[in-house]
Amino acid sequence: GQNIDQPTEMTATEGAIVQINCTYQTSGFNGLFWYQQHAGEAPTFLSYNVLDGLEEKGRFSSFLSRSKGYSYLLLKELQMKDSASYLCASMDSNYQLIWGAGTKLIIKP
Amino acid sequence: IAGITQAPTSQILAAGRRMTLRCTQDMRHNAMYWYRQDLGLGLRLIHYSNTAGTTGKGEVPDGYSVSRANTDDFPLTLASAVPSQTSVYFCASSQQGSSDTQYFGPGTRLTVL
Image (cartoon, rainbow over all chains, first blue to last red):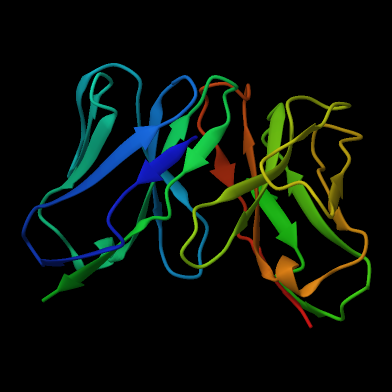
C-alpha cells in the first residue's frame, strides 16, 4: 500500500532550528513535495526534491534519500509566522500526489 | 482574478440535496484537481483532469462527479449529499499534471447535516 508518515505535532522556540521528518512508501516515485498550510488557509508550495541531496531556499531546506524513502524539511531562524502545518507528499508512478496527514509546528517565544 | 478561486467559501447543506462546488483558474493550467481534507488525514484526491475534456477518478471518487468543459473551470458536484461528505474541499491546478507544482484555491468548507 501507499503510506506517508510524519509526526503529528512538534514544538520549537523562536530563533531555533527544527527538522520535520517524512518517510514514504508509494507505488513508484516521481518526487517529494513539501507544502506549508496555515490554519484555515490553503496549502502553499515550499519545495520539490526528485534527486538525492539537499535543496536550500533561504531559511528552508529540504533533503531527500530515495534509497531510504526519507525526506526532511529543515527550518532555520524560526519566526512566529512559521507556526503552521507542514505537509509531505510523494508523487507516485501515476503522477498523483499521496499526502501525509501533516505536522503541526508550534513556535514558542 | 489571480490564481484559483472557489465558491462558495462555506456552505451548510441538508442531506440528500445536490450541491456544486465551483473552481476557476486563470493561469491557463492544463491539469486540475479536487481534494478533500479531513482532520487527522492527509489530503485525498477525489477527481482530476489532465486537460480540458478529460477527467479521472482519484482515491475517493464515490458520491462525486466532475466535468471539464474548458481549461478554466472544474466544478465538483455532490449528487445527493451525505454527512460523511462534511469536509474542507480544495481545488488545485498545475501546468502539466506531471511533476509540476500544484497550486491550491482557498477551499470550501462544507457541512452536511
